[in-house]
Length: 264
Image 1 (cartoon, rainbow, N blue to C red):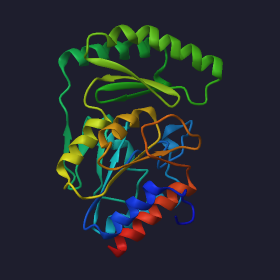
Image 2 (spheres, rainbow, N blue to C red; image 1 turned 60 degrees about the vertical axis):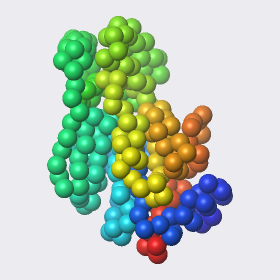
Image 3 (cartoon, rainbow, N blue to C red; image 1 turned 180 degrees about the horizontal axis):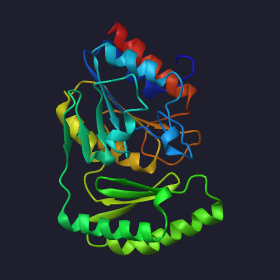
């Protein structure tokens, strides 16, 4: 393989197919994948070189590039400048921003909204607003940067308070890197990926890059149909076929993709 990429048969085979394909799909998580985690989430800008390579890939006109993120769609505008006309599935697939600027949001049941309202009241009463992220269909609490003992107490308290709201099939508790989210059961990232796969021809190369437990739904949705890539400094058990360490191996992957679709 090229410099900055691990020697992997799955990668070699995938890039060989990509080089001769007329169209392809690149699906990318954001936090922890394209950008390093930050204590202040508003400072989570992409790794250097990520945006230029994404721009090169988009400009070839041969790759459908899609961001699939747990963040709200509106949160990514600042981070991905000067890219525009991006397709983004936000809030774990609940939101969908199309390249033409049109926006769609999946329906949320009235019961789910009622339960989320109760959860929000508790967050406010517990003075956790500074750690909270409110988004369509969910509330996330982040404890990155907290002392380990304090973070452990907060996690236990969340499970105690929110588990009762997630027992009727409307909501679920979702653990992620240094945080927890109470959110609607469906859709999830895997549903977004399944929708994209359904729209894609049977031979077009597809890859999904993600880092977190929330990306496992996407890995499973793409199983047998495309390349699944875990992007994180340390390995963990995963359904992904390939492991890349950011930022160098991530940049190497994007550069290789750019080179292949430029010559296809």
